[in-house]
Image 1 (cartoon, rainbow, N blue to C red):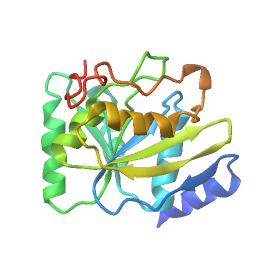
Image 2 (spheres, one colour):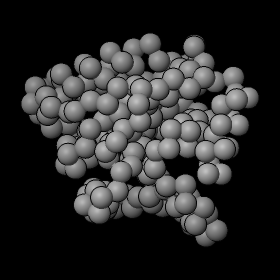
Image 3 (cartoon, one colour):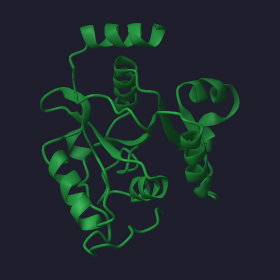
Length: 198
C-alpha cells in the first residue's frame, strides 16, 4: 500500500510520464533499456510499484554487503556471484515452480557507460526458464518511460533481436549519448544460441 502511494505521488509530480501496456500476468524477463543512468533504478521502482508488478533484479554481491543486504533484498535484489552465475537460473526456476509471478529486471546493455552492444544473459535465462520478455524502456526525448510489448522468444536469435531492435529504435535513454545498440555478438547466425555473457 505504501509503495503504491509513493509511486502515485512520484508520477503526480514527476516530469516523466508513465506509458505502459498491461502488466504481465506471468513470470517474465523485464528488460530495462537503454540503461544510461542511476535514475533508471528509481524509474524502475516507480513503474513496478504503480503497476503492482513484483520485481526481482540482479546485482553484484558487493551491493548486498553489511547493512545494505536487507533493504536491497526487500527491493527485489538478487545477489549474483560472478563465479557461479548459473545459480541465478536455478533460483528463478525455483520461484516459478513455487507459483510466484514476477518480473526479473535485466539491463542487457550492462553498465551505464556506452557499449558496443548487449549482453546475451537475458536471452539465455528467458529460454532456459521458458519466460517471455517484456520490453521496458526510458526515453528522454519524449520524457516517457514504461513497459512495451511482451514477446515470446523463438530461438531464432536474429529474428527475435530484429523485433527487439525495432522497438528500441526510437528510445534514447536518460542520457542519450550513452545509449548502445540492441545487438548481440552472434545474432546473425539463425537458430544459434547467443554467446555466454562475459
